[in-house]
Image (cartoon, rainbow, N blue to C red; front, side, top):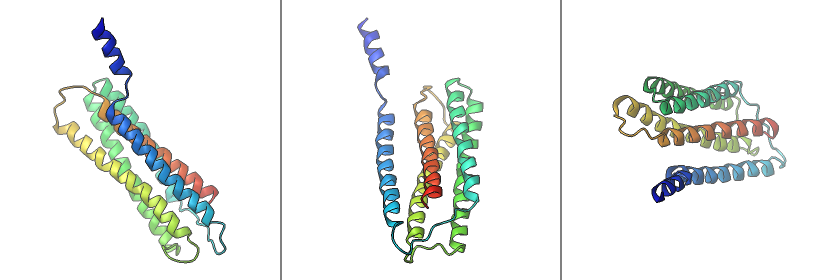
Length: 191
């Protein structure tokens, strides 16, 4: 009886990896909240220039939302122990993540060609590149982690079917997806 009670209590606790991810996400949220707040304050200055977002950012939005769906399906496949489906969906998510980063680079290039630069009195370019660039770096970090998971799914042997790594990856991936939606809406409304 004592063993069952202890086992139930352990299941109710938050896994340390998930807790660490929640702390990291909270700090990332605070960073982006500070940056977007500064953007709002600075946008009231004279000489501020609004930024028209390139259309490629809409394509990147569809790509990252699709990747959110595939990563969630990958987690489900892992829990069902359908490793072939898991590998396929994880690989698709990885490719979509790379697609998102490529779309972002194209979008940044289009903005650069529109003369949106790091310097100048308007400040909009500096803020946009920093905010969107930091998001792209977070996605790139997720892509690297996803690459490790894809490689491990193909060459590693699974001894314990613990869904924690795939759940943590999916949580982070959904987080950067939601963060992108927030930033896109922010720049449409305020930018």
